[in-house]
Image (cartoon, helix red, strand yellow):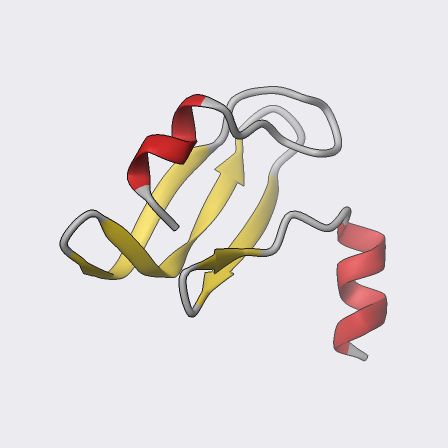
Length: 64
């Protein structure tokens, strides 16, 4: 995920701002990390450079 996407990304639940937490990156590409919404306290994972912005209930259902 490119860092400049933070300008257009919003929480899919409440539409508020997300905070980026980076675990691994290559140049301007975030490869591993998470996006966190402080308003509804949801965290969305970033894996292989792709943010998973599915609503929490759908994401948990797919992980099961």
